[in-house]
Length: 428
Image 1: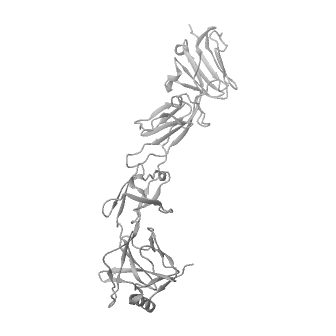
Image 2: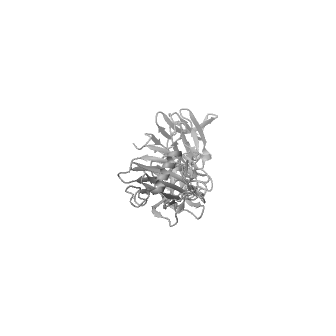
């Protein structure tokens, strides 16, 4: 274990006097060699003396126009030492005096670094675009988190901090230290002590890291609300958003590079483009240079199921007699279409069609050429177990009728695929 002592007062005076009055003669056999025994790594100072040295002494010297003043010595036992530099003011020139018992003191100079570090961030991309210093700009910087340590310096434009956008972070940026091999200055420094004629050699060893600047990375906003209509089988893409549909890592439909300019209702089938199941992801678009895109809102979408996939059977008989089913759909009960009639003066006539739903699920129906292009107001719903509807002959006779399983919000069940049952008979 290295033991450090501090020499002050009388002891300091005697030790300093010994050094000043001849310990630095040419025949001194042991010392810290300024060029081979001093190593500066940017954060600490490592010293190595001759093998027969028992102590190394260092001091943070005060240097002014009056000269060099050393108030106390830190004494490291043994012939090696590591000097902590963490309390030095990096914005000022710092001088560390170094000596052994049998060699005079010399100074190593750690030059002042920048007093200003101003970091400009592209808030959209979380990249560093510029670092202004007291004079000029930085080429390379180091970055750390609030609980981390500084690592390797990289070029200013190479820092991608987007990984911190998910949760937000406070980061710290500085220019790296610039250690150099010890180089002696031509001018020596005089002692500030009265009647002391000592002249100190000064060796430049580089600079400490620059003053750090705090940078805040904003937390990514939550994704937008995405209206989902399971009953109609539609999803509404909000305004000013980007979206993509992903299945097995492949984007099927995407506007992630384009931003919507209005609300955009879309059929699930349109988004899936033939896939059976996928994830719709929607996010708020970024603001160039100022705000990153939001997190993705994720919605599971499924292709409408056919009657076969839902184990639903169907029958259609355009020649059915009055009272018989023209169409029948069965699944845990039956949905039937029959003639609607009325009797006037004992004469029964057909007025249209009646639909009754006694199955365990809700169904929807549409009368017209193509249910896949129908407007919402023309699509009607029959409740499970007790749904009923009457179609007047003027509106339905001779036209196609389409049926599908209705979607359900509560169970997140999507509407089924439209199935054409047939063309309803004409009624004279």
